[in-house]
Image (cartoon, rainbow, N blue to C red; front, side, top):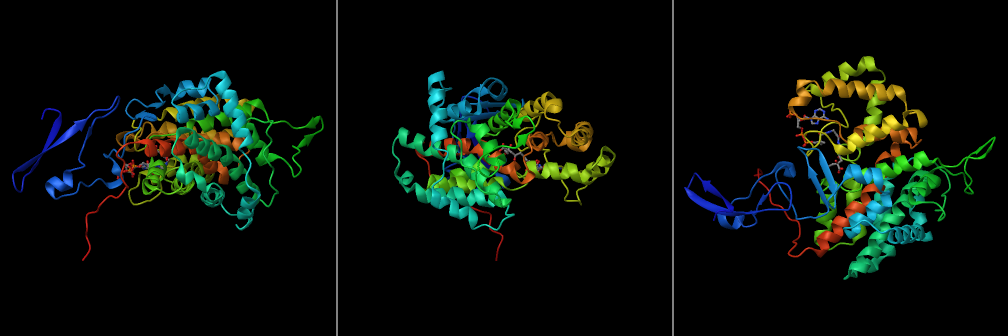
Length: 426
Ligand code: SDX
């Protein structure tokens, strides 16, 4: 077989052929689904560094080139030219919407942004001061009880309704989780406001729905703030088979409700090695405190005996640069004056980046700033509390998770995710 690889077991001299499958872009794969049946052995791949778990047409990443495409369109182009909602439409429908489709989609999500009154009781069950990520994961799972019919979907329009429902409600869930954590009453969605503006409104408005009043009248939400957050949502929308998307697909493979799969994705994203890094980056920059202290922390990050890691640095796939980080870095420069970005934090971040990009330890390990390294400074300038950084990531990523969930459901020949192990016990 020419389009194959041959494995030889040197203990027995026996050889085995495995087919090579080629995609439309990126590395080919060796189909080892019969490896155990043929050889009596499992393959071993700690953390799945060399393992493709599925086929997908949604997002493509070229880690060496620092390239990211959503449905074949470059992230830089989408971040520049399209709203987050249009990107949601693209991920869900494999095409950008026409003007009319965009308007209809926007209106549908505005009308779907409300939560069932009984669901509001769930938020109150959490002690005030709870981390919003715990509440988000619980609320997403609880949402399945209000829409249990989504277990029996069998056509595209039902998939689309299920997906639009949770994409529309996630900002409301996140805002309510935050409001509860600070002991403030919930601000209901305002359907006259756009998706991203509405989230900022639900986060910031006073009880009764009025915004802060300045001497010259009620404070409005600035266009530049809405655009900055909209871009952040777009940059977080999907990212191939990362840890949280893999969790969503694993839960999808057992046949559970789509919203509990999203809950599993939220839980996986919370970890500081994944989406929780954005909150840790800001805490780390604040802990470093000044440019003078950077060297000491870089030494700690390089010390194998010290578990300290430079949050926001490194990536399993990007070994050149994270294109999303570049977009955010440019956005930081654009917003610096208009949003009064914290110059001290930016100086510390720039110093870290300058040292790390020239230090053999980071260069040899191809550790570059990732998306989380830059997002925190902008979110801080948008007056988003650090506890809400990863919930912001959840809002952006929900459409990616649910698009991947639908793709899994529509794929032929999928199986329940059930890896094996190398047993080291008695
Ligand atoms: C996200 O997968 C995705 O696509 C995720 C994401 C998405 O959009 O879904 O892009 C979002 O999660 C971005 C990553 C956010 N996480 C962080 O910023 C946390 C800090 N970074 C790391 O912990 C780490 O880099 C990972 C988890 C991101 C990647 O880990 P890998 O690929 O398993 O790499 P590794 O842990 O094997 O590290 C390789 C080497 C090790 O050194 P040696 O053992 O070879 O001596 O690099 C070192 C690591 O110690 N290393 C770091 C480091 N990251 C890796 N050393 C210091 N600081 C770091 N940040």
